[in-house]
Length: 197
Image (cartoon, rainbow, N blue to C red; front, side, top):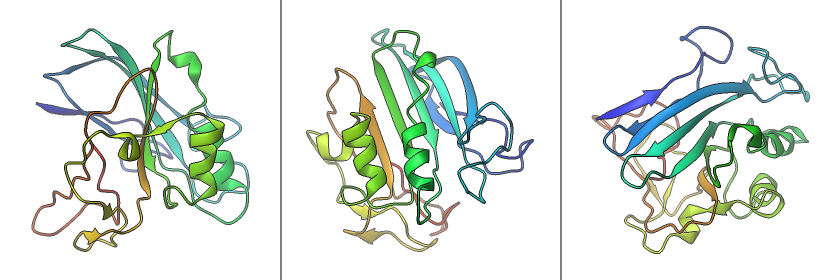
């Protein structure tokens, strides 16, 4: 069964934009979860600083693997892409809350980063500065071709820009990766972001 952890909306309540985490209850057991805002005051709901006009947040959850017992932390976020320091600051903040790891070595960071993988400054900050590993590149096997993960609510675009990323920071290996293009009647709930799995 697929469940989700959906946080408070970006402003307040459940009707605003949020960063939900979907997980398979047959494999994973949630231990705790929460959210924070990408700002100088991360615990203040709807807060925004750094010259950003759009409120952005992150959801985090600690899981235990029902099969192996391994515990790990997942962060889901959507930094704002804008000329200047805003996306840089967001990406420096997104993987920051190590206090929520509680000693678990495995961290997974997923999100719509609004910037192309491998060639953008936010990507370089996360892979070089924060020491995260891009799972699409690190995967031993790719189960699908690369599609653009920004498609403007249209059909999948082969060999396009990957703006949705899945990173790990851990002593682990990535056995496989795929870009999930599943949709209903060629409709999608957002303009991009076929998530890696």
